[in-house]
Length: 240
Image (cartoon, rainbow, N blue to C red; front, side, top):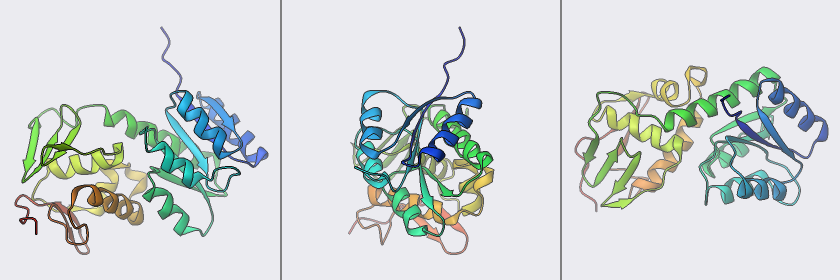
């Protein structure tokens, strides 16, 4: 039986760009559903399973931010947001609302395909064991990371994480007590082509902290080592 083609949703109100994206994804072997506004995008994602979603930020009816936020209420499908050049705040806002990656207009076909391959690869890795010799569960204070179940609990309450957030935490948990550089985290979680994308890491780390920490501005678990990287503390301070 032939392998199932990955299905990609592409949403953009620029018909010429949408045709370009659709055609090149199809040439790469993907099945593509193309829509021209945010409401159509949300309806499609609610109706069927996609392997990845490409969302333009500026769309009629619902913008890409709103779609990302609503999708994250029920799905962890990888989302790539498309922003205008120079709109760094749009990138940060999109990532903060749950997007996994971004493209900046104008972008090349090669960059588009590379970003899609990257999010699909990460989604696949999120469903495989993180390694063969890991302890099945790592427990630090009230935090427990169950690698076999891909499950994270805090004070016995399950914490809902996106695939990116889980891979960040899992990698830190594999190296508990050890400082991991920003570039090593980026390479492990996103891929070697993302080395140097520090803001991508910072936004996702902030989002992860908001889910794990009583006070994200004074974290107990994920500590920053200025100018170096991050460490999952082996002995978290008591909650205050």
